[in-house]
Image (cartoon, rainbow, N blue to C red; front, side, top):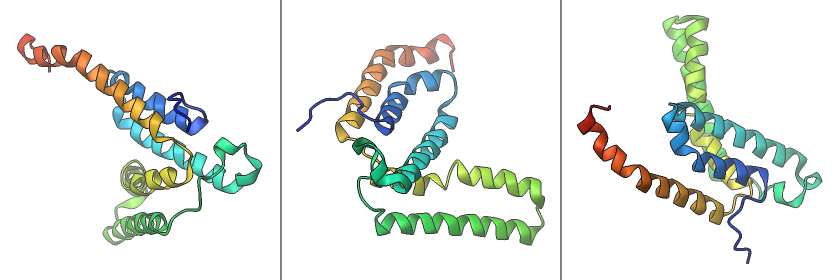
Length: 156
């Protein structure tokens, strides 16, 4: 059993670094962007992993086939996108609004299918995720006194 908490492949590194830098992203107002970027990046890695499978080094190969439930989530989110387009056509909202809403779908609803897909396909060890969560927790405890004092000194 490998007890190393250090990331050993690209997906683990991406997930770990994103967790570790959570408060930095928060400080710069980037959390709204980081979630969708993380989801779509992991989706791209999952697709590459599924497509190239055996030709990749062992740590990047798919952890297994895509489970049926993940396929159902993917289908559900695609149905939502088609319904979005249908609603825009029915109400005559135009191409500009349709593109804007499709981007909104991609940074919101689509993630409900992308994260389970990444979790099912990519080899990200639980230890790495837990270690990243512990780092977030430590920084939260360190910043807690400042967060409690902020409203009393006039900060938002």
